[in-house]
Image (cartoon, rainbow, N blue to C red):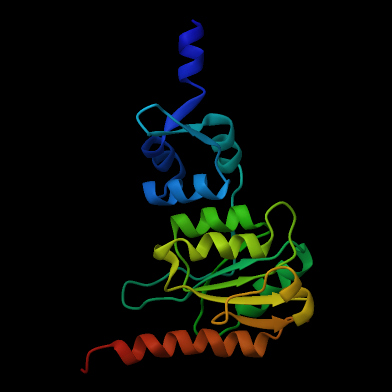
Length: 206
């Protein structure tokens, strides 16, 4: 009986990936970043602790009701917003619903849920705050930069921190645009439009 209990306390990285709906590589990344607790066997194989897996499974990102699902004929911009202020999340949702490219918007209030959402459905545009409980935006960006599967995602930071505070806390990669609060929706919409325009430029001539 005791052996059966021990076996249920952990699972392989592949089993964890199947339960989470992500790749094995993403599970390994989350283990290395501390999102999932794991240990290694004598043979060097990772075993993921069930408790940490169950905790991650309970963190669910929310798809905005206003999001429009992609049609068969065209690709729709996928946007992930990470902001711990519920009022600002509602503001993002309401404003982005009126964008002409009709994006699919996913909202989440913490970095862990954001990483889970990205592992399942990588967005074209990630809009994130820096000051969040548990894992902050700085830590989230470090995790993302270690994952090549997220290299094509455009990342924009919207924060109330000034440049000096950002540098004091480790800084942000130079290729990531930093926008101040209150949320500059005109600039965000322009960035989104630029991503969509790039898709059109890559289309073969008719």
